[in-house]
Length: 179
Image (tube, rainbow, N blue to C red):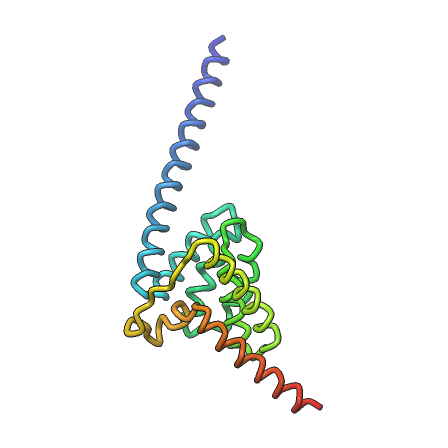
C-alpha cells in the first residue's frame, strides 16, 4: 500500500512538472508570436525572421511558420531562399491563396517566368473571385511603399496584371532566344 501511494505521488509529481513545462512553452510561444508579428509589421524583417525560425523550432507543426519565414526571406538579402518555404506553406490549412502571389514573385526573382505566370494567374483569378464575393478594395497609399516593403504592397489586380504581362513577354523572349 505504501509503495502504491509513493508511486501515485511520484506519477502526480511528474505529471505536474510536465504540465507546467507545457504551459510555460505555450506562454513562450505566444510571446514569441506577438514579437515576430510586431517586428514584421514594423518592417524589421531580419528580427521577424529570427523569431519565426525560433517558433518553427519550438512547434510540433513543422510547416506552420513557413509562410511567414518565406515572407521575411523575400524581404531580405536572402530572397532567393524563400521559394521552398512558400511551396511548403501551400499545403498548410491556414495558408491563404495569397501564397500564390509570393510563389509567383519568388519565381520571377529566380528568373523562371513560366512558373511565375502559373502562380500569378492563379492568384489573380482567386483575387478576382475574392473581390467579387467581398467587395474588397485595396487601400494602399503609394507614399507608404518603400523598397523594403514593395513586395508586400504590390498585390493589387493592376500590379499582378503588370507582372503577368512582364512574365509573358520575358517567357516569350527566352523561348525565341532558345530556338
